[in-house]
Length: 91
Image (tube, rainbow, N blue to C red; front, side, top):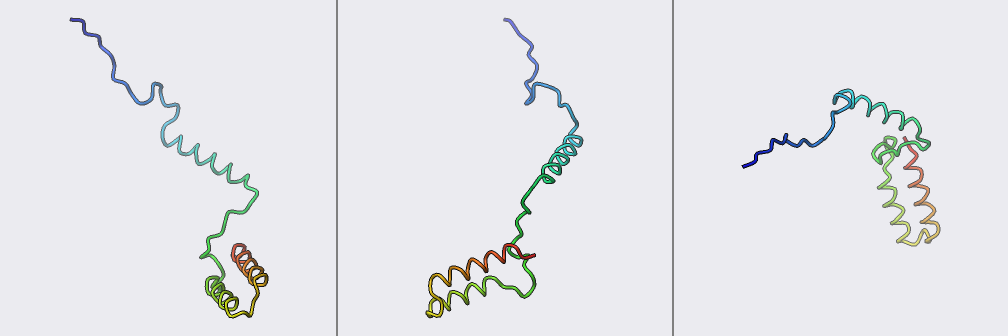
């Protein structure tokens, strides 16, 4: 009977070039360099608006005005776009 010794297979057939901590630091450095190249400001969460500014309540008020007939479709759409556009830039 022929017995061939074969070493156990590992998940990576080559040596890791850096230690895990060095690789983590390198990855963070690359991420910071990438973030520095962004041309658009990162999105602001909806909760980060100024205090006392409740976008949802204002949208509900606009919807009630629209349903009652005080605002037509075009005025409602323009007011809603202005409100949502201002809410996205607030902060």
